[in-house]
Image (cartoon, rainbow, N blue to C red):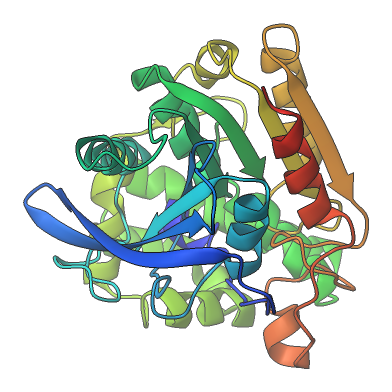
Length: 349
């Protein structure tokens, strides 16, 4: 329930007027299922390489709705092809969507896509970069550690090694104007619920310990958008994967990747890390410090942050999870974000 719903990037399509790429549909197989993808190639030139666009959390309609179009065209303008696909059970991809798919399994999915690009002799597919936001901040480091020919990584709104929902919940309750004591009560009940589920506790025990949480409007809205109403089936659905995780002794938060510090430290390829300074989904300052601690001494690390920008690097006021949806705000990319990507790619050797 947590890792996929909390870090969902609410993908807004930002219009990019002048398409500079040739678009091709390209599918690949993963675990016996056909996944539907789209390849964008620069016009009238051989691509320098190819950048895989790795999704954050939640369902996708990426191919049909041209997700990340402005980002993809920016990458194409820098001379690179892009490849993106829909998750299982989404769009025209086969199989059944699994909201509890592990980040380790998602990494294997990425590697399957890379292998297909290589087999089909996509131009310069041997020079491969990764782009991804939020949950992809777990997936891409795993891929880089397992597939040794990744050339670079663009991380957007990256994550640390732990579950971020307590941060999201606390910050968004604060934005909604709840008093601190109420926020602390609800967040602590969420943490207690995690502890109970992780220990194999029953649905009744979980519900009894989280009564105020289960009445909170933000939490209920979150549940409805991702799971429907809380039920024993929903509870056991996230309890199983959660019981396989480790809980951090100090914070009680699930740790999704063991030894994440070393995984990041093993990255030797150039990394561009971009953050919105009004990100209320993940604690960007914490992730920034983690990147500096683990990667700055071992690779070419470039970090840039954008003021008044949310988790999706869109101009915002509060950064609240439902700010755009509730206020019908325009989806305007933060100034300098696309330029930062294109300029960085143009400097790569």
